[in-house]
Amino acid sequence: MISWINGELVESWQTNQKFFVLINCQGLGYEVQILESFFLILKTNQISNKNITLWIKHIKKEDSDFLFGFTSKDQKNFFIDILSIRGVGSQIGMGILNKFSISEVINAIKTQNKKLICSVPGIGQKMGDRLILELKSRFKSEILLEEGKSKDELEIKNPEINKIVDDLELTLKSLNYKNKEIKTILPILIKEVDILTTKKKKISFENLLKFAMNHLDSDCSNIAR
Image (cartoon, rainbow, N blue to C red; front, top):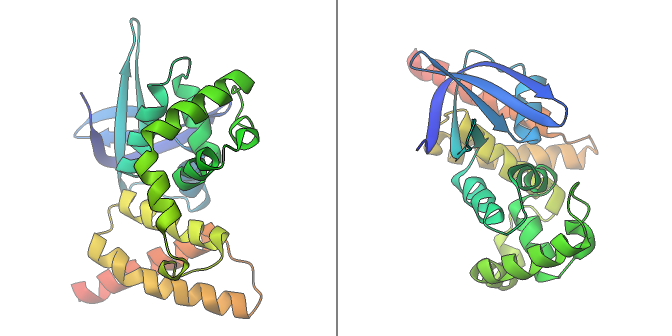
């Protein structure tokens, strides 16, 4: 059983609506299906010859093996929970996580937003009903936690920008930056978001990731000196 992989990114590619990376791990090449968001990060920022870490769900079938990679353990566990529902296959699970964050899915379950769930390709009305019903019981504690959150706990009030910052944190972890480094850069990123918002400039995930990586790599270079 493979739980996670840490290795050098060799290449990434797209086949139809599926996204893959090839990772060199101690001389072995592992082909892993990943989420579209991470694929776009790798392509947009031309990240290569860099070590990445992915949490792996290994699915073994009669004639083949499949590896699905995620930038966080929560994503992997959520994927596993989705697959445990009757009639839900791996590509529908990936489709849900390609389109929505975990918190967005949990909120849709809480509000019984079947329209949002059924917007994922491959999910019809009956499957949407079953997903909401079964996931509601599985994520009861998470739903209660979401309901009990105070607005003051959020450092960024705009939910769209807040999601970008959350995704940045996960991405930096998958690129093997240390937790201590990431905690240091997050307040700087939030300050940068405030500056861009004040100047009414466009805020994009790609630009903020480049900003964070340049800042972190610069700090590492200064320490090395």
